[in-house]
Image (cartoon, rainbow over all chains, first blue to last red; front, side, top):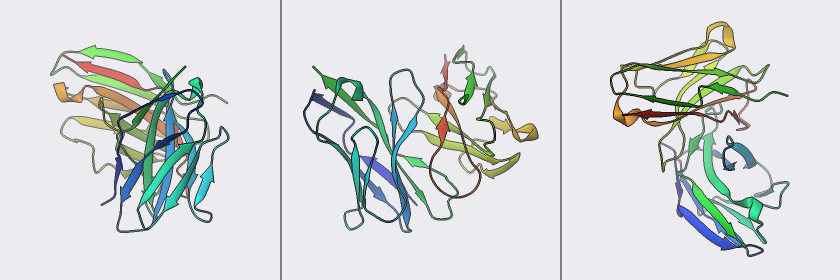
Length: 114
Length: 115
């Protein structure tokens, strides 16, 4: 069975500092990996995804994540965060033939302070 | 483009009462999902529809939860009777049919409090 572990429930950071949100997964089959973001009072929205090809994927607002198969990880990074990045971030996994069934981690609350 | 619409946004009921949530997906999206998000946890899939057929309901507590998607468009999730542990946010999402791109479009959710 597939599972997702987000190692940090909360990550406080100062504005313009780098940040890494950690995500590990467990699966016996090939997986697809995703990061979703939930801004305050908004619904979940897709931030970035890995389906195949290059193991480094990027979002339009400066986040990136790298698929590491040997370590079963998909950590999310940003070299310099902004106040507007304050949100809850969810790592999710689906699997080939899973027909878009997403399994989510428990989430990491990123709090960016001035 | 209109997003996924859900109602009501908030609902407070007493245990053993019933409640229903409504979802209208993005126009043209054949696949519709209901997720349950308990405080401090990630969303958990309850049921997935493809048009008006059920693709996956393995984690739906069928003794008290039911869902339908008549005509393959909007959907209703019902809980009867509610228990204290049903307190959660119920998220509806939709996506294009087919493939496995992982891009689900979520509504803002319906927050249920069971007293």
